[in-house]
Image (cartoon, rainbow, N blue to C red; front, side, top):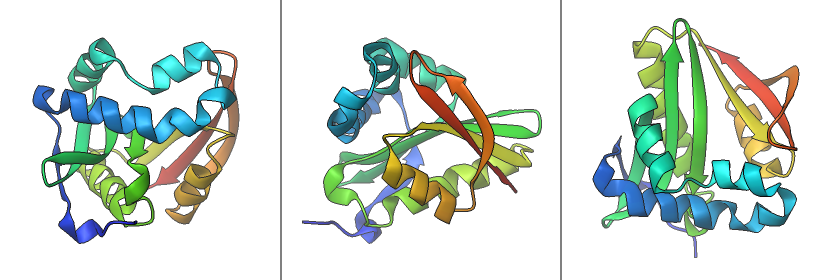
Length: 159
């Protein structure tokens, strides 16, 4: 059963959100485990140390409904360019609007930090994510890099 986005609050994440974020990421990416190399999967689905590092290095957002983390996304600004990482939505919240709300919230934050362009990397198995990012105005830059034995496709959007 799909949920409705109107019941979620989007806010900055904290250390207290660690278990919820880690659960959200693990559940969201589990269907793709066999499509990933083991090192790429381990870096995509954070562990507690990785979550702490992400909180220190990036602005991490969570979508919360009834004290449950239903989605997350992270972003960082380096000069005029922002970089997105780690978007994950619980399966039962897909197509609820949460992903679009998280993306627009992090984009607004990056713009407020002075970013004029946002980039992200995604992998070929994440076809639904690629469609989502294209719909949100992101275009493939043509850049493809190695992500621990997988192709990482670079997408960008001008603000």
